[in-house]
Image 1 (spheres, helix red, strand yellow):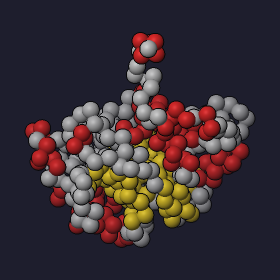
Image 2: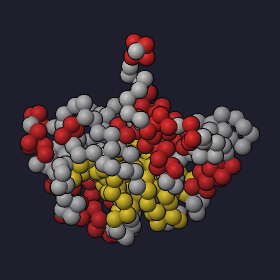
Image 3: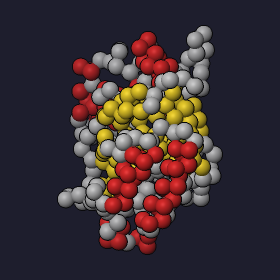
Length: 294
């Protein structure tokens, strides 16, 4: 085992709905299993505190599930991280002054909060996420691990469908993107994960809900597209099946960093002076030819 090998536990579980006592107990058991298997970091699927449930279509009841960042449920995972000596990225519906937010908080192996990220690309076309307050940025944090320090950022589910999200995180120095997920990971979405890794020269870890809630397929990909002889390489380090599992996967940080040092993707050949349209709203993505004839 390499000294720079990071072991990531993808907690592919079925949610417990609004029963926070159950989600705490199930989440703790999964983290203990991950630590026993040697994990340095455990990642939950999206909105673990609610199981990404929306019961009876009642928005008010759903909003009432929001909890502050200092809630005992959240702090229990901070204490657990310190006890186990393992970083934990836990997800929950956060209560904020402006409305509920879909967040992930990363606690390091001493139980200290090093990163909290709120989902920027909320699914505003659908309940209950149209009731969410959007995040306002993509922070990157230094996470100390047994494999050494790692620069970590996060996206949440729908965020991964926007290349700008991963690019901003990469430009902020991220080497590893944590992606809590709550939707079907079929071929096209899995392809998006691989594309984000390849184009930004980052590793991407995705934890999804198990079947029957979603379809599992939690995954870890790296950006190393070619081997030492220049032959095409499968960047998929790991992909789970559909069943519940605590999947501990190894990421070779030194190989990742060597690829980033020597290859041309990521930031090396960018031409940001030509990308002004990316900062404009609207445009041709959804408009037809008629809009351009005016």
